[in-house]
Length: 199
Image 1: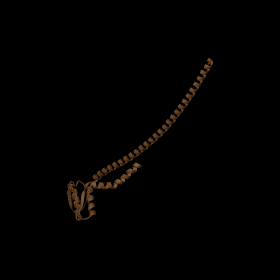
Image 2: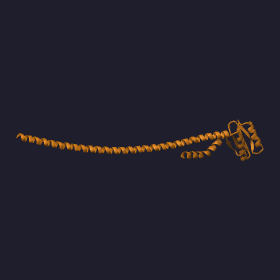
Image 3: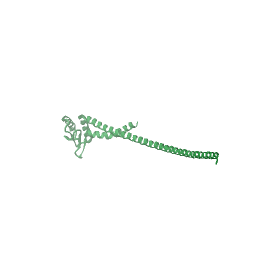
């Protein structure tokens, strides 16, 4: 074989080898690009799914937070309303106690005995002034409603009216009056407080 033929053969082999290598390189490159494209698409899909999931989770957290805040606000409103009602009860009791003067008791005793009728015994606190007890006794002796006054050291404030023939008695004290007023006023106060908290 001549040198020219050998060179031509070598050149042909080189050309074919280079061409085959280029084709293989192009195939590898194309395959790599397809794989890279596939990886990018999968990553984009995962990213979109993660973002969507994160947004849903964030919305659920926000909704739960809003619900918890609303419940906390309702609980606080109810708690404050109950505390205010307790405070109003204490103030009412104090005001009634301060208003339970000897003069008021004298008028209340006379009114109760006038309305209840005859056969009445009266118990007064042991600490009550003698003068007040005497005034009440004088005013009642003119009527036939009255059986007498007993001073009771266990009774701190108020008075007890007993219908001796029928065996019943009523204790009228600042606490009893305040509790009665509180039962009557609490629903109204509650409604006012509820209306104020909603407005």
